[in-house]
Length: 254
Image (cartoon, rainbow, N blue to C red):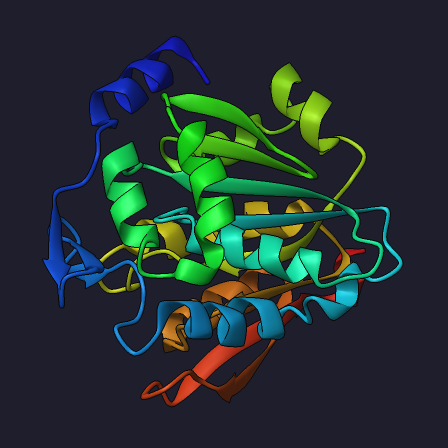
């Protein structure tokens, strides 16, 4: 990032103001949206992001695997992916790249993840090393490396090839992203994370036959994904949501 971009990132950095619904479902007041479904956050993550990307089956036979997401939120997607990784007989090394403008505090993170007792062990490992700062943060969680970019994803995504610490830990200069979790807040309330230029940058970083999944099927989001170079398909959504979207990098992009 340039000095000016770093200054703006630092100025924008700060934890979100949260409202807690039903005691344990965090809602970001600034975006007017919840971080996970009241109908079952972990079940939705498994349905949309894991199954939508063919996981954990695609972990089989791999030495390494890279997942990237827009919107780290509570870390629920990360922990669900780690749990899925543990179900594989010979799990690969997992690199998890995530972008977040407003990271939760350690206390907020812990309270949110308390809603998922089966993830407690990994949640405790995450909160024990949780101290995000603007820019790139590299967190080691056993076989999992979390590269957390704190700031505007539209700026940070261009840094992946230029940050030695990220290159060293993720190998992004040689390894492409295998699966995307597109999990920003509602597109109507957080359009920046569904911007066509950002999605084009994501496509450029995606491996041949790399995939994506998202809970939204908004028409303009689908068009932006197609414009970025993904073949997309609508599937049945989770709980009360009629549809979700999965995609694969179009073959002509290589």
